[in-house]
Length: 247
Image (cartoon, rainbow, N blue to C red; front, top):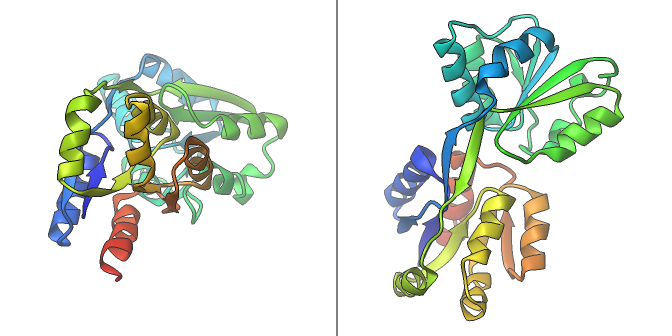
């Protein structure tokens, strides 16, 4: 029994280490890389004009903060800050030194239920995101009368891999659980596999951070999908420990 962790960078390494510390075998195989976004130079202008800032991930916060520091700019203190998840909110609060609002369940649907997003008619909103994603937030706020702009603060680049070489290794390592934290990563992973390999893949226990990705996974043929309700390592670890150790 082992877990295949696909989330990139330090977050993926950290989750694997936490799993090892809990006595759970884990392999790290990132399927995307994270790079600075093309619109970071425009960030100060967007922040100067907006009333609400929404960060969709820790990457969005980290790259935004680095860009502001490089341009000798600071986060404004007159705006309302929101984050999709608790961990992202913590990171955003640390760099802005401001209160950051977030939903108890870290997804777009629950973010949109927050009071400060219920009356946004005429307000200017900036969404800090990667290259694509979170269209539900954008579309809903537009419907509510807000002016909404995206700022691409980072970009995800797919990493191709040789499934004919790796799948036999994963099978030999007795991979039974799979962690994927975005729909884009899920689709990319599935696309790399042959038809017979997908049969094996869909038999794994898949851990994803939202109900939306659960439904996408079920449509792709996955049989056992666990919604962790968060992409934080803390919540992913808790869910994995619960299913692998019965705790």
